[in-house]
Length: 133
Length: 132
Image 1 (cartoon, rainbow over the protein chains, first blue to last red):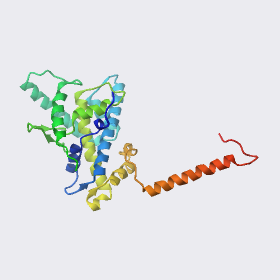
Image 2 (image 1 turned 30 degrees about the horizontal axis):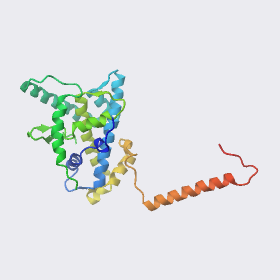
Image 3 (image 1 turned 90 degrees about the vertical axis):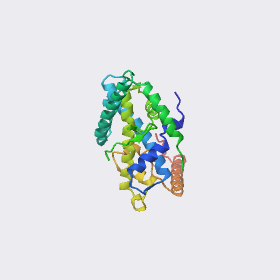
């Protein structure tokens, strides 16, 4: 499957926001720096995926799961991420549980499910707001 | 730094992840050995990427020269990639920049070295043997 180059990049607006929120007020970020961080983020995803996949293969599984990703973080020396990630996972589970009690939707924990399409729509709306400065 | 990055979607509901999952999945799937990705793994990878962006930005800012100028520059980032072991995997995509004039000079010197070698090989010498 051929991906267009821009598909492997993350939206500028979101990356910029994350950077701005992390740095002290009033700090400027050059366009080059922003683009570099964006590229780095894509590489990070690839590296994390590859690492997580090794753990899945070791467990003789074809599907990457949460523990594979957490193990990958430790392997990549990003242990500092493990606790916040676990917290996010708990939050997500709680939200999904609440959603389920509201609707009759079946539990979808597997890949390529409809939840993504929901997010896709929301995401695409956000991307339209992107402005390059 | 362990703060969760939250965003709000159009319903005003707090979202745990700002980066689009669809895009994250495209990148993950571009990896040849990966067959399938479970939803939790996708969310965690997206969240981890956000944490990574924050970490890379703050680390580079703190350790870079940009602190005096109140700015984060490309060289702060490439410096991080080179100096920090944690970020070393980024060294290839964040190379240090050199002046074009310096690079051209390097090219010229290399060319001269190569030419010199060639001349030595072609020269008349009894002891001359083809180098492997």
